[in-house]
Amino acid sequence: MPRPVAERLDLTNQSYVILIRTKTSSERYYRDKAGWVKVSTRGRTFRATADQVLNHVLPALAGVKPNVTIDVEHNDPTS
Image (cartoon, rainbow, N blue to C red; front, side):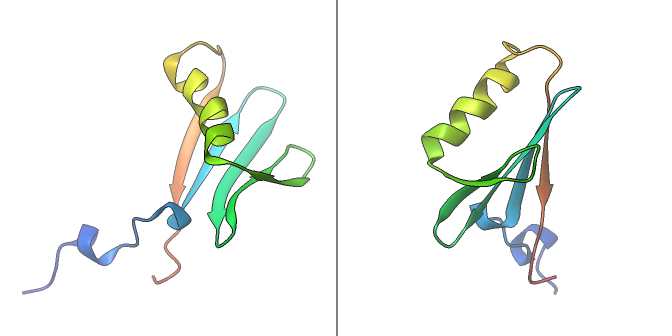
């Protein structure tokens, strides 16, 4: 019997991209081998700690920042 899809997917931090969007900007966060990376609206790349990522994501999720959209995309390199 085949394994369930969730067991075959890579569900680690490295397999997700977090997108934070407003009307005029968008930021992307993803994890590589060295840690978290932020890509700004202008395409600049910055290293980020996990605390910095949470400091950007949590206020938007809590509704403190109006007109902010957060999307999480799964990117499974094994599929």
